[in-house]
Image (tube, rainbow, N blue to C red; front, top):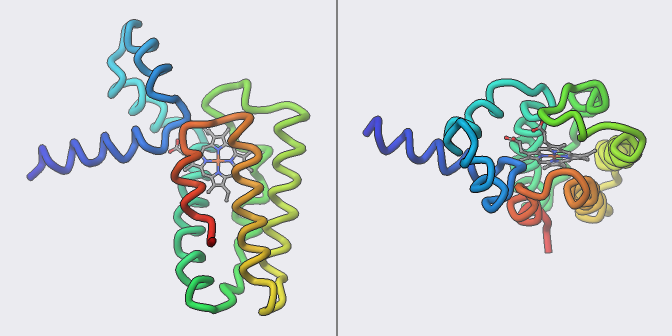
Length: 151
Ligand code: HEC
């Protein structure tokens, strides 16, 4: 049972980590195994923790939006510090990253203040803002982020 939980956890982490599997294989040739590497990545960065919370919040919102409700979010404060959060990789910063972050904050505000009629539109705009940044900075979780979209 413990063993099963352990493997499930490893699989879940592997799914959401930034590193694509081929990169992971390359890094595996270094001193740490890919499992250790992913776990090490997991323990530190504020940005990674922020992202995990964000992903969970969006999963909840998606259910509400699909049911035709306005999620009436008030999570802007929770994520507005995205530009200050320490990333795992120092390259995930700088003016281009900040521009994506500003777009994300704007989309978050758009969904928080949406009229009932535009909930789906504004929800998908927010997911698009995730996708835009992730195409540039962190392609690993793109598949699971795309699944947040409401078709
Ligand atoms: C401005 C850029 C940017 C935006 C916008 C953004 N992300 Fe991220 N995301 C990142 C970066 C960079 C990482 C890697 C963080 C790290 O490892 O420190 C990341 C990591 C993640 C992860 C993996 C976390 C982990 O466990 O390592 C998930 C899942 C994720 N983002 C989901 C989302 C979702 C959902 C949204 C939109 C609601 C979103 N992201 C918006 C840049 C962004």
